[in-house]
Amino acid sequence: MIHHHPDNNMLLEYASGSLNWAHSIVVAAHLQLCPKCAADLKLLNGIGGNLLATSAPVPASAPDQEKQSFEQLMRRIDSDNQSSKASEAPEEKAPRSALPRKLAKDPVFASVPPVVGKLLGQNSALRWRRLSKGLKEARLKTGQCQHEVAFHRIAPGNKVAEHDHRGTEITMVLYGSFSDADGIYSPGDFLVREPGETHRPTATQDHECLCLSVVEAPVALTGLMGKLVNPFLSFRPQ
Image (cartoon, rainbow, N blue to C red; front, top):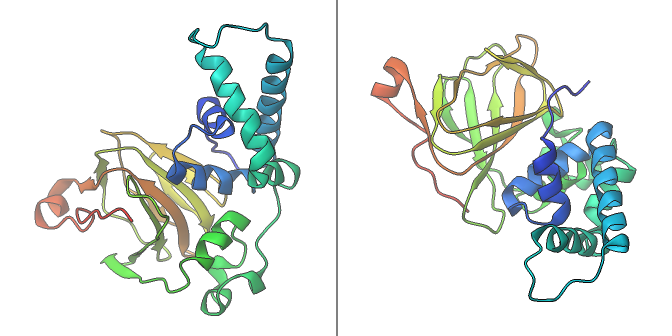
């Protein structure tokens, strides 16, 4: 069961089309696994439609940010099949055959949501680099340069070095699970870390953990390890 979700403000931004592209990838992936958030999104879409239908005409020059937001929302309903599919079939998974051949044989990618499967199709040759013992990263090309989008694989029982965040970091679990001081995160769980927050993810002993992460600035290792090495500082958005 999914216990951690994007907040309503982020869902509204996603629905209106104002959420940045990198964050939209992770939100869309969560929607395709989470019936609750898919239903919330459908409700937001319905509210937007009702407001547009009942709102009184206003001069074109009058500032009306809310109306503009819902006009964007309705345009997205018409043009973005991805969000409508997410609300109608949130539990759909990407079939193994849709993945690149090498990845289809990897169990951690067996049940990724369709939007991640599509992303993998555009990044069939993942280049994994080892950040530390038990932690690997593969950066993804997403056609934008404001954020870094990447997969992170944590070996069973491995503890990632404690780190601080210099910008917003969004993480969604795709396979396995990990825990930190605030809780346990399983497939579909959606975690947002803001600047100044620290944590130390630890994978469960029985399975490795695969996460999809989006960061807008490098993280900084804390404690003694931070004084010795910081493998995350080579932030290169793609």
